[in-house]
Amino acid sequence: MITKMKKLTFLVYHKEYEAFLERIRELGVVHIVEKQWGEMDDGLQQFMQKRSLYKNMLQAMYNLAEKQPEETVYAGQSADGLVQKYDDLQLQLQDLNQKLPQLNKDIAQMEVWGDFDWDSVNKLKDAGWHIQFYMCHERDYNEAWTEEYNAIPVQERGGYINFVTVTPGTVELGLEPLRLPALSLSELMARKTEMEAQIVATQDALSAFCKANYRTLEQYSIQLEGDIDLLKVKLNSEEKAEGAVVLLEGWIPVDNETEVKDFLDNSGVYYEIRNARKEDNAPIKLRNNAFTRMYEVLTKMYGMPDYAEFDPTPILAPFFSLFFAFCMGDAGYGLVLIALGFFLKKKLSKSLRGMMNLVITLGIFTAVIGAVLGTFFGVSLFDLEIPADLKQFMIVGKVGDTSYDKQMLLALLIGVVHICIAMTVKAVGQTVRFGFKESLSAWGWLLLVVGFVCTGGLSFFKVISEDVSTWAFIVIGGISAIGIYLLNNIHRNVFVNVGAGLWDTYNMATGLMGDILSYIRLYALGLAGGMLGGVFNQLAFMVNDAAGPALGWLFCGLILVFGHTLNIAMSCLSAFVHPLRLTFVEYFKNSGYEGKGETYKPFTVVKKQIN
View 1 (cartoon, rainbow, N blue to C red):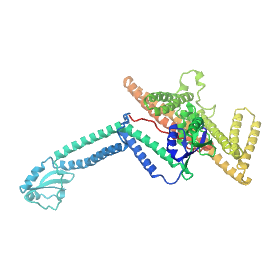
View 2: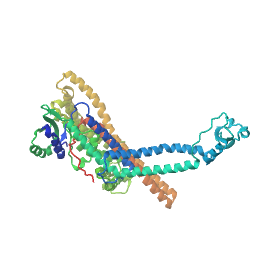
View 3: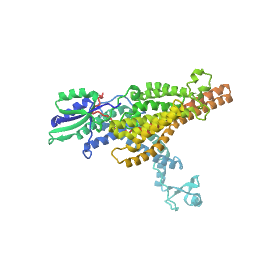
View 4: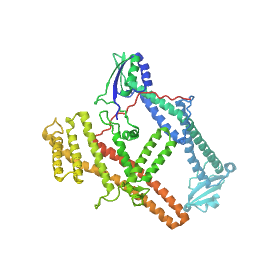
């Protein structure tokens, strides 16, 4: 359900405005109306840039802290100081990581010549003997250099020769002498060891810094959010009477009306309060029971309803659970989800425990629906020796002597019901928003589809005779045609209405058929998961028979655990994505849901002390 809202308008004396905003902030229930007064204020722009910096830095710090930051928040640290310290450590680590590849390159170059002492080379040079280092291709090497220049080959590798010349003076061989690093190989290796130790130490220091200061920066980020909210409120204020008073507009839930009135009466400010209208862009606050509230996250993924729309969550909740269970299609997998939900509920943070309640609920639905579909860890329950009284509740096999699968027809039937409910919601919603006369087309289509489905079903099961069903089709079709072709828009020419009705008929005929056929994916995914589970079972017991009693059971268990774990993971993914698609596309399209509402975000202060 959508909580009813009240519109508030304040007129505050400009000298009392700052103090009034702080009191409103402490109250924490007023959603301030945001208005666009032009370009973003410089101060707000700086705050937004800083918020983006904190957000990115916090994400990196959380990973560097190995996702286990300390819970202490320190008062002695400043946000700018934390950012500077973090940047210094990152720059130091980056500088070391940039120098290491060059050092490795120097080491690789010196490894060719071995570990010699440059001081000895320099002493020979002072004594008049020059040592030069060369590298050339084998075909370019001249053996005469050995006699003429005391050339000494050091290494031959990859078709190239590395050699040195020892001469009383410099020589010209037509080759460019190599420029070697100024340090010996042992010195380079020692420097590399030292640099690697510095990198490890810097990484440890950065990780320790992130662990110790993550919560502190997080608190400053929260405070910055409050400052941004306050500045936004000030920017959304409108000065009146040459700046003597300030006009501010906001929304409150109807449940908080008495509390807010008492506060405003004691504040001595002028205010007006009225009920939200359909045309108002009132913020949305959902109010549902414990079961439905778990599924609000799915509604928010698509978009909050408009204030004049219906909250889709109460209908989304049971159908999404049914779709998920149908796609999983295995009672054993449902029990695994229940156990996993209870286990993770004890391990995860408070913010994620609500999601585990949803996992447990989906597991319960999966266990029940999986038992009805007759599958338990890939084993067909219907083929086991279980009481016949239980088998009669299972939906397996074909319909009579036909080739139609019961589960496939059940998926299509669920689709028909889902689409009919969506069309009902659309007709009722348009009537509430625009009036009955403006929604005759929606009612016409609802009567046509639901009427034909009900009449066809009653005729199929021989509840009504063939003559009665024929007349029912004629009457329902005739009444529906009036709304669809003649009264779809009472403000237009009747011939235009007929043309629009024909176009609408084409779209509905092609769209409805495709929408209903989309629900076959429920059957297909459940069937695929069950078949894959059965394949893993067969493979496991084949290995068991082939490997003998000792190793057989070991390999059998490993294949069963790995196979069903993989199947559960893939089934959960498909069982989440495809029901979400059936809801977001098939249901929302036929129910006319737009999801363009604004979420209720009260102007409040985050109260979290720094130790």
